[in-house]
Image 1 (tube, rainbow, N blue to C red):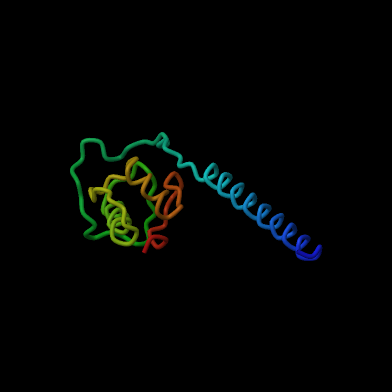
Image 2: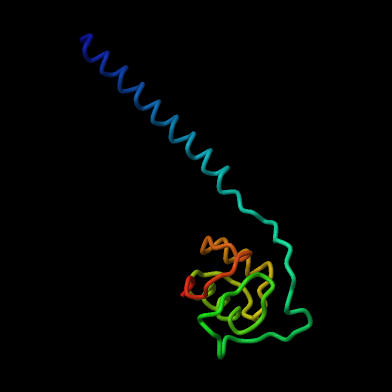
Length: 120
């Protein structure tokens, strides 16, 4: 083999090892950055001892937040299930299970008011 071919082979190996290293490092960093937050925030529940409701008569202009209760929350739960493939009970009670699904599937934080138009 000529010296030129040897240098090209060495350079190619160095480039491939460098690219593999950066791919590995990026995957490690990404997996650390995407750890889910599995702690439900503290909230005041408006639905203690209340029956389940459905989304009939919901107001699309209302905002909902964790702890809320009513048709608007049921609508949000239906949208999470049908549009995003979540599996939350449609009961009109915005608790931890709905909050986790909202975060996981939409990236929205249910600790702040959610505009129902954002999940249509």
